[in-house]
Length: 295
Image (tube, rainbow, N blue to C red; front, side, top):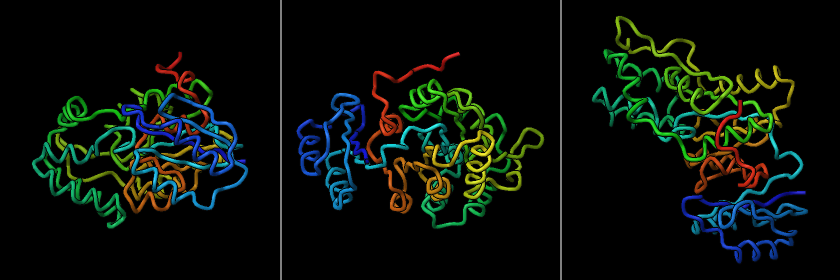
C-alpha cells in the first residue's frame, strides 16, 4: 500500500479539493484525508502510478508538491537535517563572506559546490581562506542580524520529539552556527566543521578532517547504531550535493528546495512546501503539530 500526498506552501494555500479528487479518481485511490485544509491532503493507493513524475511536473506549475511513498514505513524515529538553506534560510559562510567583503566570490563557489560541480573539501578550504583575518565577533553579529530560521522548523522538531523521535543537525558549515541553531530548535546533537581562531581572528583554515558528504553518512550510521534503530527509521533533509549520501541512505530522503542536480536523484522533492512538509509526509495532521518543545 502506498500513500500519495499533495501539499503546498502554507503561506499561500493552493491545494484545491477538486484537484485532489481528480487525481484520486484517475489513480483509483482511496478516500482523501485532509491533513490541513487547502495545504495538505493524502489518499491511499494500491500500486505506484506509472505517470507519477509526469503528474508531479504538471502540479509543480500549480505550486503543489506530490509525493508517493510506502504507507507502512513513513512515520520515522529520527530526523537527520542539514543546516544551511535547510534549517536556516541562508548559507552561513556566504553571510560571513559578506562581512569580509568577499561575498560574490564566496557565493559563486558555494553555489557550484552545492550543485556538485566542485569538490566539497577543496571548495570549503578555499572559501574559509577568504575569511582570514575576520574578527571572531563577526560570527555573533551574523547570527544575530543575518540568519533566519526556515519556516516550519520549530513545528517539525517539537512534533517529532513529542512523538519520541531523535533529532541530529549535521552540517558542512560550522559549529559556531550549528550549536546555536541546534539549541534554539531543540536538536539532540549537532556536528559540523570548526573555524580556527587565533588572537580573536579567523585563521582562514578549518579544522581537519573536514566534515563533508561521507561524514554525514557516517553520522547516520553511528547514530542509528547507537539508538538501535534502522536507517529505514530515519527521515533526512537537505539541499546540496554533500547531502546526497545521507538522503539516499535514509528511509525517507527529502530534497528540500534543492539544487536541480540533487533533486533529480531523490524520490521525495519539496519545492513549494516548508519544513512542515516533513510532518505531512509522515501523516501528521496540522492539529497534531506541536509548536514548542516539551520539558
